[in-house]
Image (cartoon, rainbow, N blue to C red):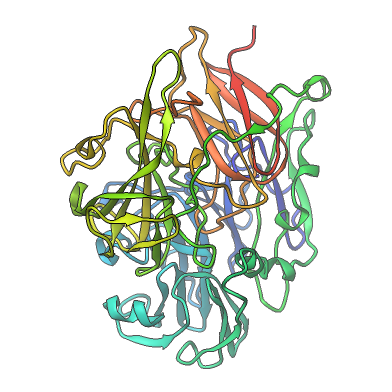
Length: 560
């Protein structure tokens, strides 16, 4: 469970709780760990979701912290969202990030050379989880746009990608795989390199120059992505479990976690392929024993009228690092929609029936489609009339419809791209609920913060077998608490854009006219969770139950 109250660490070897100091926790809610690796010199490297890198040097009694910096002279890492490490034979340390490329240090982490947006452009930004493999002097960096390869510490690069990626690659292509969206890369032996991608798996015995596809699941099976991404979990080997919690605390949520997501690959023939670090809420025994269910029972969804804009056969998980209302830990503007990261050229589907009211450039030049849907939402009492519902699709590489076209839900209306203000290939989806039938109020190239946008996660169908959590966070004066962080949910997918905490809306976001929520998150696995938030220095907890196909409503306010 990323981003809750304490950590469960699984570490191979002779390490014990006595000689692993707790990670420094500046928030008091735990450190959201994404990657763990042991360097050849014995140092332990930990990558986190938003808190940079922690290093425990051999013989040291405390953790060293490495963070990003806007001062280019600082030679820091490029981004604080780190979930991949690799170590070369001459002491090289590689790291990979969620959303801003990767970097290399040749002096043990004192200084870094980075490949980020400025060097890479609007692709290659999302390194796969544990997506760095070193073979001799060759480094393989697996990303959502293919694999970058270097054998001279980044002086030159080569590319392994698919046929579409080969047309946009700026470096020489040395190998072709069926799909460029790589979710995992493994070195099973000195001679064999494996990758998992959206269409299956592939193996190379010549360093990535030629590939043999080894798994081709049915593209119509909505569960096949889960099977692909669970391949690494099948390799889980036993390790030593160390619970890092204070002595007077007890973990009350361990039984709610899928045991396959609380483990790691240690000492297998595949090497250190995966380490899953989920957080476990730690509450005092008295509080845990007295806690009762405080959220409302799960209820029916009110208006999930629409299908998802990306097919199950592609990558249809919502990016969890930058959801509606999120600032990605204070790094960006409050987000106006949700993201579906996919390769350039992936089909974009209309989420419902309606008429195309915009097809062309929008804010910052993004190629955009807007649809006014046939279904309208009744105005909340005491008002009379209907609200107009629009869906808007940004950053496309190509538009396949024009203004005035009538579309049905599921029709292909565009192809995924990175036009406009984009740092990767993805679809940005917005839902607007407006009292006016005015396209200009929905899509205006001069307006960055539209006036009637709402959270798409309350409008599109959740992934089958999952539910939705929504609610409100109030301060002691009865006012909404903006940009508050709510911890405690488990969101194992998508692994390449990992979940850490829910963030309440800021002043640029708008509540749904039906729910009037301060936050909402879909695709939540059924189960019991303890959610926690800090309000004016006071921690408030709620126990919630999530059911498939339903919405769980929860409210937070300071305790008397």
